[in-house]
Amino acid sequence: MKKVFSSLVIAAAMTFGMVNFSSAQNDSTAAPKDPVKEAATTPATKTNEEEGKKKDLTFVQSLKQKFIEGDPVWMTPVLICLIIGLALAIERIVYLNLSTINTKRFMDEVETALKNGGTEAAKDVCRNTRGPIASIYYQGLDRADEGIDMVEKSVVAYGGVQMGLLEKGLSWLSLFIALAPMLGFLGTVIGMIFAFDKIVEEGQVSPTTVADGIKVSLLTTVFGLIAAIILQVFYNYIVSKVDGIVNEMEDASISLVDMMLKHKVTIANKG
View 1 (cartoon, rainbow, N blue to C red):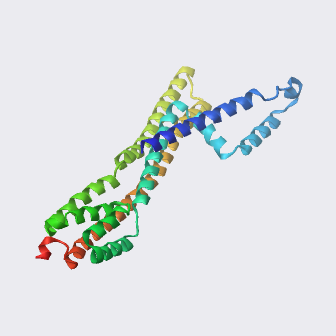
View 2: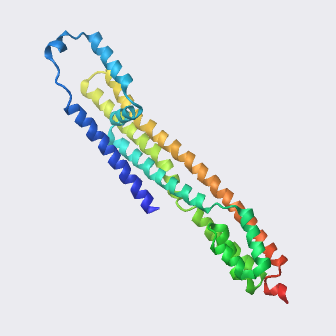
């Protein structure tokens, strides 16, 4: 998880830095303006040129422009929350997908191994299968010679351990879901304070000053809410995935006990 986490953070930082560098390079290599042409250009022509430039902006460029307008000092923490939250979400999704198996097929293989080769053959099947269900089966089969009660206790105890592994990192993901909009609101409040300070300095309420200040301050809230929405979607997907695996674990645990009683694996049923 730490490797995925650090890799995504470094990649995002490098990408953002390269975009800034390319933008600065394009500005520096731009052709100098001709004073004669500049003087001959009417305000209407300038307005049309500005509108054309805005239309030519790509989605990434527009996003970057809004990021800068919202003040990178307050937008950067929101972006960091989004990147870290996505790293945690991707790590959990990969882990949960690797933990998902064809449970019915696995139980059939274990039952066949119990019937033909006993507990050792069934344990070999569990060793060669990934996921929490196979781990629970292995723990139960490993205690088969201690009686059915010990098997049930072992399955329940190890099931709790596997559930904790499945839910690992979800508390941090929920933290970033709550933190992103809070940071956005913080930037909005501070931006509004700066806007009112500017009004006090000018001694008058200018519509342009008020509108610009409110627009810039609200951008942090928008980005914070977008980050929280994205992370919330991933969080709900992960929780539903965990619930599905836990339900399969419980059903498979009951089936293991029934299976062992059916084939008389434990000492309690051998006598």
